[in-house]
Length: 113
Image (cartoon, rainbow, N blue to C red; front, side, top):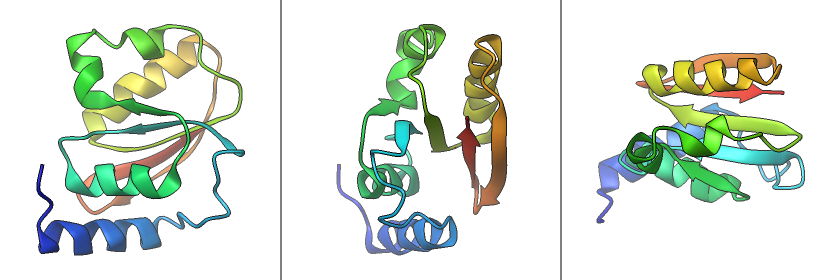
């Protein structure tokens, strides 16, 4: 898939606004949830690194990965609101609290503990 210049610039702006720095390394993040259909989300996940879950694939498997026991540690995501609500619900079922969320353009950046 080809990423346009505009999408790349928007993704860079979202990533820098989100505070996604090299300090937020795979050692501190247990899981990164992103949507490969959204260039901003895809580029953000590539910048963060670590174990990833693609929302686009989860729709096909009925969220099987997030229904299973989640790894210990932080789970972060940059997704649409509806996908955030689903992920938050699955995490709440496993008694994983929401640490925070904020809007990043058309997407939502969130953190589950």
